[in-house]
Length: 203
Length: 228
Ligand SMILES: Nc1ncnc2c1ncn2[C@@H]1O[C@H](COP(=O)(O)OP(=O)(O)OP(=O)(O)O)[C@@H](O)[C@H]1O
Ligand SMILES: [Mg+2]
Figure 1 (tube, chains in turn brown, red):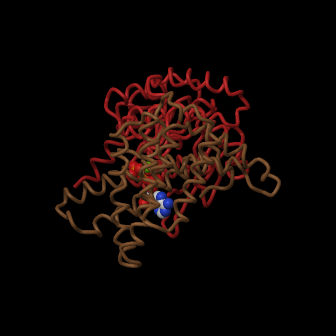
Figure 2 (tube, helix red, strand yellow):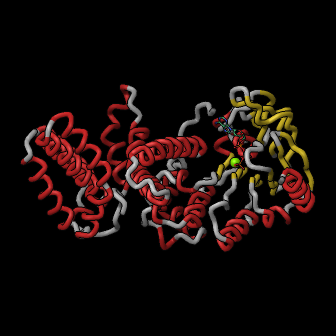
Figure 3 (cartoon, chains in turn orange, purple):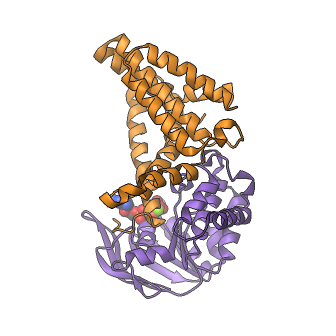
């Protein structure tokens, strides 16, 4: 199923202030990735699972999220193992997985609008030095929308590969995945331009 | 009103549109033609997504090439793939995104969003992940997000390609009920038949320009002549 989407609800985490959640996520993720030890992802996983369940998001959703990330995890794990060994693979890939799940918990309990408002508010003072908070907030919203879109594309490409009897060919997975992801990005870009996000020149 | 004045377009050394002169005043205009004939390129010229290499396009007196930002505020654009034009994770958020510059208060925005989703039959899906909507529902959402800004002109590039008959008719009825001028590219002959004006495009040129039945007849003849 799909990662990172708002799940309507009234748990303590849903009601917690947005700024606090985002800040907590930021601090936790930084600690997680800075503490370069296999204990970090292990502890992180326990905490994330506890918060996830505590916010009433359910076991099935948690498992589905992990399952949705299987391709990313598999590819990264192989690369890391090969480049830096098994320990590093656990630290890096485990850390990343926990960080994504943690972000998933925050986005599942926070409306994008609320999150964007919080980001715009927090970045407001930076407006004077040329940062456009609306842009940053839009980028954030888009990123969250893009995760399920890419997971969907990956699933379709994997199905198409299986249907053509090329079950193991990495090329039959990666080439169409990249091509379609780029095409999707193009289409989203056009839609944003058409919706007046960037009033600059078109093609 | 949409005017094409000697419009031509090339992608690299491939000429995709040539000598397009059109004066579109009817409330509902259809565009039909073979795959690759240049329909999407033509439609994209109306809001400046494509800048023609020659000639100019004018919408309600505004030159698309010069006053692009103003034109885009007046022209709503519906793409064939509804998945790509929904930029926010849920329907309520996507419609609210369109209203970000409308200068409404938080509660006014919420009210407008609710009323719009209601009108498009999506009230029950306000907070569902947009990715889980059916294609038909997604296209209705795309329309909702565009029409909530009340554009003066609506350009639709194959808005019903992915839809079943029921959703196709629903979208068509919706488009026909709009006060806006609509320019719709489609391969659906049922939608074209009843129109007052249909433009037939072939190899980058306008080869017929008349009422619905005439346009459909020309298009059929064209398709059957090419089939071998
Ligand atoms: N960005 C681009 N770069 C290069 N060539 C392009 C680009 N977009 C379209 N073309 C080419 O221009 C021609 C016309 O394309 P267009 O998309 O306008 O056709 P269409 O009539 O909309 O076709 P369809 O019915 O398949 O949607 C095609 O030959 C296409 O390959
Ligand atoms: Mg097209």
